[in-house]
Image 1 (cartoon, rainbow, N blue to C red):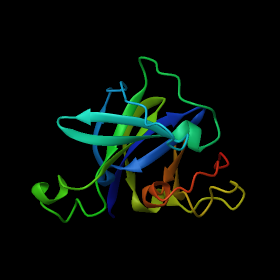
Image 2: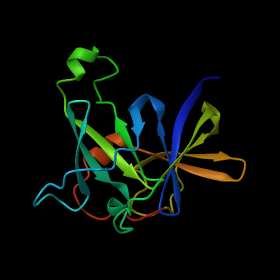
Image 3: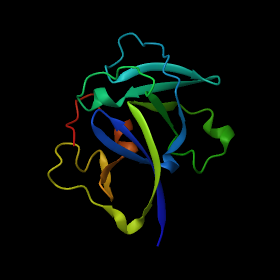
Amino acid sequence: MAQQKYVTFSVGQYLFGINVLNVREINHNVDCTIVPLAPKHIRGLINLRGQIVTLLDLRNMFGLGTIDITEETHNIILKNENFITASEEESNNQDRVGFMIDTIGDIITVEEEDLESPPANVGDIDGRYLTHVIKQKSLVVSVLNVSRLLNYDGRVLETV
């Protein structure tokens, strides 16, 4: 039985997860530079050790308003899709993107058989922005489809 690890986090009242293989790092650098005339879901740019990272506001993308910066606010900096197969030097030349989230959770380990398809009644996000749902004890974690979110077209997503 194969195991997978997921970083969990909250956006509004919802609990989400991303496969750790998609995460480069998690940080608390929320001091970003606003980009004039950028779409509302682009929160701004940060300088991460000499690399410019575009931050996407997941709360805004899900139609929950704009994230209020608090002590709990974090960024999840993503690996590029080709990062896993590319060398570090090659990946440094690629654009960096991160999600600004309300609070960071735990890293959970999940058995492959505990990954379930998203239910049909979760709304517009179903099938496009969720890959799986994980049930662990009293928690339900919606696993985000990172590739689809990075191709977000600016329309507000329905929440799960």
